[in-house]
Amino acid sequence: MRFMVIVKSNEQTEAGVLPRKEDLELMGKYNEELVKAGVMLAGEGLQPSSKGARVKFDGSTRTVTDGPFAESKELIAGFWIMETKSKEEAIEWVKRAPMDGGTELEVRQVFEADDFGDAFTPELREQEERRRRQAAAQPPSRRTGAQPPRAS
Image 1 (tube, rainbow, N blue to C red):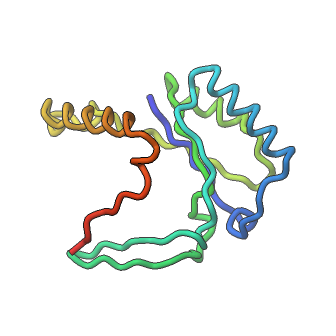
Image 2: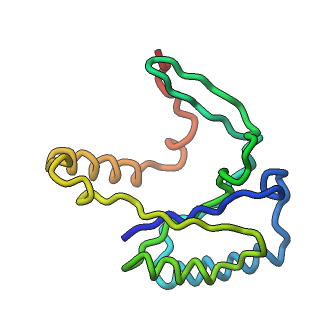
């Protein structure tokens, strides 16, 4: 089972306050534990929402709003993707995270192919697997700089 652990933002993360060296060292040790245990698949911190944008979809209309965004309690400051045997195991790992007072982490299960039942046909499963293999095989230089097709 895969879980996304969402680190909620706060006033400091939204202000772009960087972690102290000591905090980075503690987080590094925690991440090493996750990797050694085979639990961590990915994990990153995010820049404040002032450096982001939102794209709202309404029929064929796309509206872009640049950050910052008003409600920091609902924003994400970082994440981990973990693979564990259960939600309870994911929660036990999360409880060990070196977070300070006021930080809130949210644990959400990632959909797996079987969760979609018969609607996720063998053809769609193969297509999804092919996309995942292709994405993983892309060299870093191909992952950046590509221009998306223009939205109409």
